[in-house]
Length: 130
Image 1: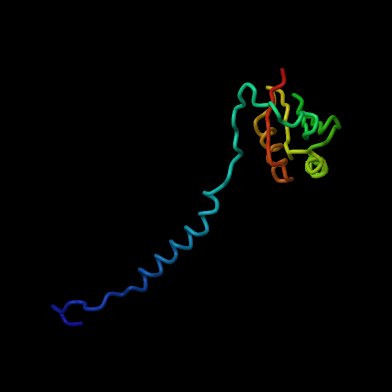
Image 2 (image 1 turned 30 degrees about the vertical axis):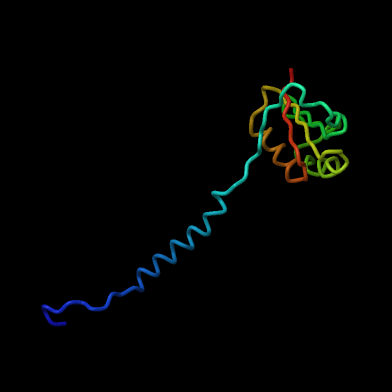
């Protein structure tokens, strides 16, 4: 190349490579950012009027020592999904009510609610043991 001459052509190959790489990275990362959560709302006085009785729903009891009962029957953590798979279709509103002790870890409660949602629960309720 001679001195004093200007470059007339710009090499766009590297610019296109970087741009396409960034597009691919954003396309792969986008589903992880759009994760859904569990919607929690507080109930109001009189909200239970005209609703299905608690006995017609799936009731899960989580004791302070981490033992689970589904509709009064003891269930292990490994059997929880199978028990919910049977119980949820039988409930009227496909609602799961979780009664937990204040001493339970949040992870245990979230694991149960997540399992219930995966097995087809439409509504979730959390009650605190007195």
